[in-house]
Image 1 (cartoon, rainbow, N blue to C red):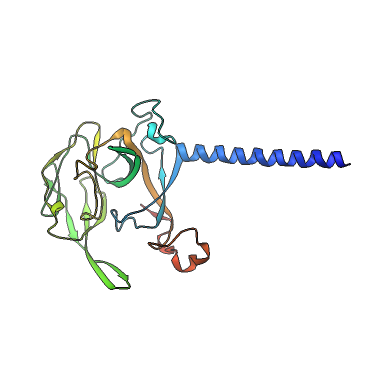
Image 2: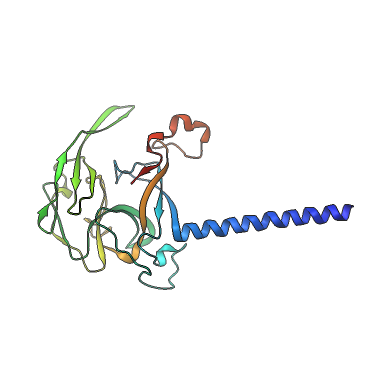
Length: 248
């Protein structure tokens, strides 16, 4: 009887290990080929994405490169099953000068485009992008209320989104013309005066298609800025429930 019980316990442990291994393999497959979770650490995409947002990125949206795989092994170049990004997509990519770093910005310029900012207005191939003033973006903290000018921008393909303008006379409101090379994309943050993006050639610059990780799809969880997500006992007060399941 004791031997039977030991054999049953050993068999039960083996089944548990098998289930755990299968679950880990399934999670790895999902993360590599379907969806990968990311969190937002900075305010460069306000107010589309906020610090403390957790989102899913579709890995299959643009096909797969070596950067789609864990640890980005250098086993092949280019992309397979490639599907080019659409202007206006919010995408995660590997920083060209340091592929260990993930960035998230909006696709503004396609290969061959000429991009420029003139007096805070985005120009694509010499044509101003419509920019309409809407209500201010308002935040409140212990120091009081802060208001930031907010606009609705509409790209030539009809994609529309909100951008913030912290300083109407910032250095990034007037730029030279950027000519996007073949196979590259021009990325910008929606928080235009608080975003290190393709306008800064030495820091980000033009992003190779190979460096794209995936397209941001949905916010699945969100906590207030500065609040640890793991403190579940504080969720009734720290979770931004209005942002959960928000499409991007």
